[in-house]
Image 1 (cartoon, rainbow, N blue to C red):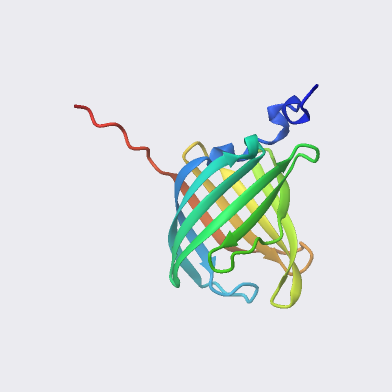
Image 2: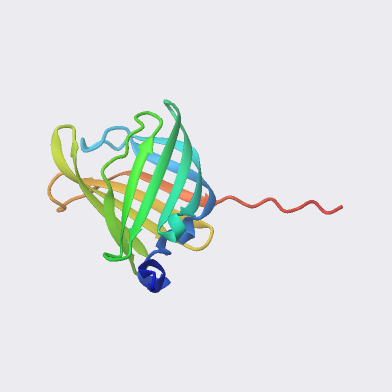
Length: 172
């Protein structure tokens, strides 16, 4: 009897987030006011720890961010669907402890694009995540909102990640 999950080639996209496995330091920038023409940014640092789960069909990471308003702990759960070859990305924090609606998308030519329609301040917008990797030790995540059906975008949060060095054993 064949197992459909292992019969699919690993190149189907389930390894797309493997670049993010491990421990990362991040420099985060978040607009103070979104979709209001603001150009004032809050800057803060974070540490993320990412791992595979669900036999490789999932990834999750926990991030601790030292924001101007205090410490925030976030959890990202990414689930891969072998049939659609798409990822669903769910997010929550210790401030609300409920999963947001998923961002849906995939990687193509080294760029991961993920979208969701959501309500922001009483109006329906499109939200977009963009993931890029610039080698084994750095990557970037961006969030942007579009209030006009995708005709224009405002990037409102970025995170530049640097892989944390692993401690080398002390020679005796």
